[in-house]
Image (cartoon, rainbow, N blue to C red; front, top):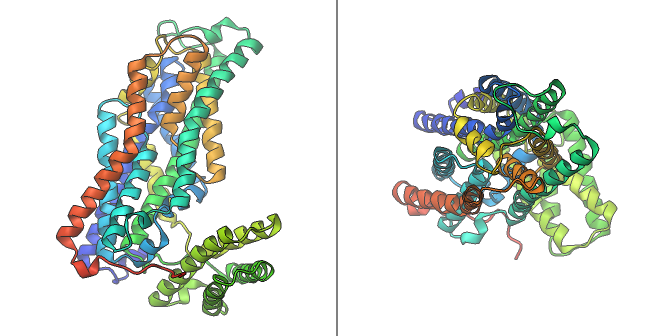
Length: 479
């Protein structure tokens, strides 16, 4: 945080930066009561916890989930934008990019919350990033398609599409398994009045709510962390160009990774890309070879190091596609690229705490609209104890698996699909009006946020940025 007050950022840019950070944390706050309502719906509608106890508990567990999360999902969000844009875009255009994507995602989230639709904050955020990326690339003279890291988008899109199907199928299957293995009829009955369920059932449901809340904090919290880091990179790139915690041990490991990359390329030559890769690796080696910390570099040196590292990764990505590597070489290249990227892939400590607090507090407010939809309007009958537990167990396992892989998924769609799956397996019937509305929100979220974010950026850049300041050169040339 102190880097923001070192005098390198003027008064107005600093003000705009804090506005964007406030909007980003506001997005996470909205995400808390928009998405986490799914986690508390089952314990509220099965009378396992009183509503105010459930949301406070879920909020605290969400906060812990963020604090204990890794960074893989956060970097997936950051790398949705091609490195050309992250490195080359000017500060004014960068500010407009992050402001427009934040506004687009927030507007859609609030709109769907107002109508009680369990829409996905993940879809809204990803659509908005794609929208501003395409618009920025078009203005930059590189064409619309160059504004998105399509490989990363395909990876994320696959996870977002498949995970609700997993939720539906496996939650229904788990309910059927429970019916065969556990014969206690109380588990499959509806709550009676305001009486809580039997102790072991109540304990089970509180446990599954805790698991979903934790996994939501871990996965969605990383999206918020990635979003804030995207803001810092886009708006104050010199202050957040390289990892400030990169020390002598990291330098030694990075130099070893450079040697590994050279060995892979030597054993698997590709004449077109190899010289350019070697040129960049030599620059990195010479820049960091005698350092004990990257903090000793000047800001221009940090900016140039960032450009070189990111250009190297672009070239290595092209190389890995151009050359069919045997498994040992492919794994060596993958781990070496990850170590090289750790120079620029990092999370600032205060960002984690700020996002955790925003998400945790958001969980405690505004939850009721979504809870009513999940608890009452998906199935034609009241949610039973077993249905709630099955849906949440599958949601927890699916989200934590996505965390390990490093891809963002939607808690909303996984859990809503899980509840629908248990209703179908139980032959309880589905309210197709609600299913239709949820599916409509699912289908529309990405294209609407893409168009909204792109339109906002086009309008803002046309008004604010001079034509000569809108263009930028590609990060690497391979032709």
